[in-house]
Amino acid sequence: MGTRADFYVGVGQGAEWLGSVAFDGYQWAEHPDLPIPSAHTEDEFRSAVHAELEGRDDATNPDQGWPWPWGDSGTTDYAYYFTDGAVRWDKRDDWPDMTKIMRVTLGKRSGVFVVSAK
Image 1 (cartoon, helix red, strand yellow):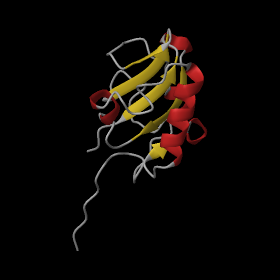
Image 2 (cartoon, rainbow, N blue to C red):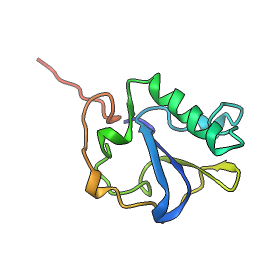
Image 3 (spheres, rainbow, N blue to C red):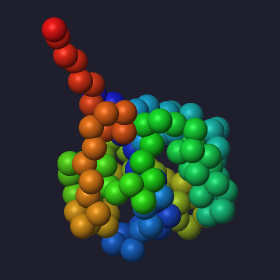
Image 4 (cartoon, helix red, strand yellow):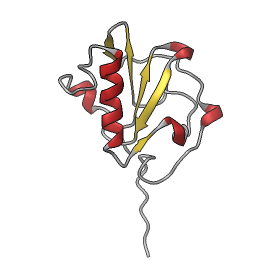
């Protein structure tokens, strides 16, 4: 299974989901010098997240729907969010309910390894 991450601007039910990745979601918490965690403005954060998602085949954008089989980011391994001039990734329990846009996926965007034998 992959280490999943979701990205938001804001907090609480009004947070704006920018997208998600299915693998290596820990890297921004472990490397604060990367563009996503080191963003100082909302525009920098949005640009860094967009650039990251654009270059990955395990990324999900909002127009593709919520990729996970759970209803919010409380279960996602990492949820990065920009608020009050900084990027944070502490655990929260007030993420937006994503069940209305849920489109659970399998394959590269899911973070699930599927092994088959013949």
